[in-house]
Image (cartoon, helix red, strand yellow):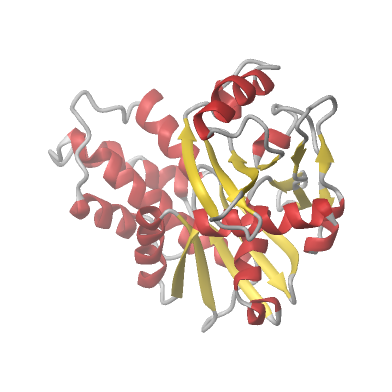
Length: 306
């Protein structure tokens, strides 16, 4: 019978996914919690981890390893960034032990690279998924790999021989939420998941992702000027934002025609990205984000004990 070894957690801005892992890196049980770091007061993380997460998992006495925004300046403690080009070994060497925790808690560092607008771009958690995905098949650590992590803040990574060379972030998911909740696009009607509206949004994005601010107004025009149901606006916005991202982001990581894009994340969201990228001629493969996170955290845990 497998024995519980540690708690693994991917603690992002909106939620926490946590698992009890055995010493072979297999998840024995897991749970999801709705308190991401952006939904907690400063200093709240240790109490919620101790009083809610550990009891829910039956893991009061286990060490823990966490990745994601929990290691940012709005998380539990700040785990400093590792600069690109970043190898797994450098990230593992920078694991931070949270002071005063018994059983011990480690937090994975993020990764940093120069951004396209001058300020640095940063990863928190996606690097762990990427390294977990690489570890799943040794051949992946040779040559060049192009990865997209769809999400609240999508991340596009270029990896060469196992090193994260550069990456670019996109605010598409958060912008989608803001527009639907706090803008003129907010619908008085219940949301309808409308595939035709999503496809309409993909078409409205254009082929190069440019003029997004002007193209976004089509979400208003189709309702006010063409009689579309406001309930379909979220689907239209989803298509337009994902379509714009698909049209512009691959070039920013140096992707070239004929290369394959690896999508790592939730199946339903990856399917939408695959549709958007397929319209533009890209070949994609989809991989489970939860499995990648577990594999990456297991590899980091082994490194923490080494």
